[in-house]
Image 1 (tube, rainbow, N blue to C red):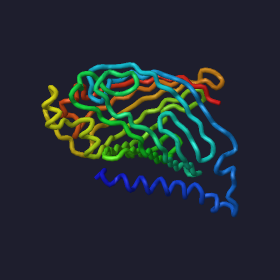
Image 2: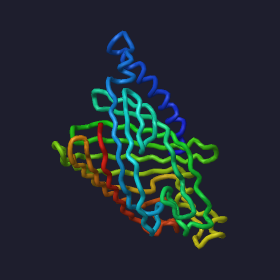
Image 3: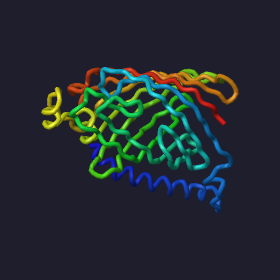
Image 4: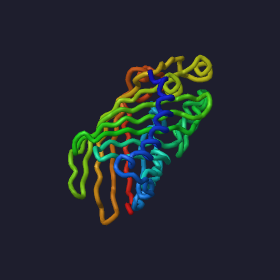
Length: 272
């Protein structure tokens, strides 16, 4: 199912650029520089901390530094969580973006900046790779939005594909406060699931883990709650809690010491 994702996303990236360039023609005979570059730069910078398992399924928890960098002008954007690329937002609330991001993979030692742990010694590294990152969203009502987000690795012979589909509901959105609830499903292709949840015969021979094959398909659900608060002019704080129960392709993996991990992330940012 998800093994067919790559050609679709590559086509989507080309289509996004074409849509971004041709959309103004429907409204005027002239392609304006203001449409492509916008009339102003919007940006935010900040930092935070993330408390989460060392890797998916790990019993150990680690605290990592999280940079917050965001800038957009017209159809162009840079985002520390999504990479750099192009975006389009229509008057109907439809949003699509295509960017290049980086998947860190997983290491075999404890690292403050990369998922992994010493208990994975003998498993070998899951190699990192640049990825095509695609996000599509639709504002259904002022309080409800739905979205789909996908990553496809670009490194040769890696071919990991990961898809998230979900919804977000703004329970409170008034002035200085915003509280949102989210729910998602997570799907990986065979190479993604095998990389993060599977154990080959060779890996089993070098570790304490038993062999396990993780085919492509659904591997987790997730639910989240986020609170954003305006501290002062230009200053905002955010707290988010996320629980991710592993199911189907992942829950029986010998790597899953915690089948329902919870993570917390807290950030402070300055918005220009």
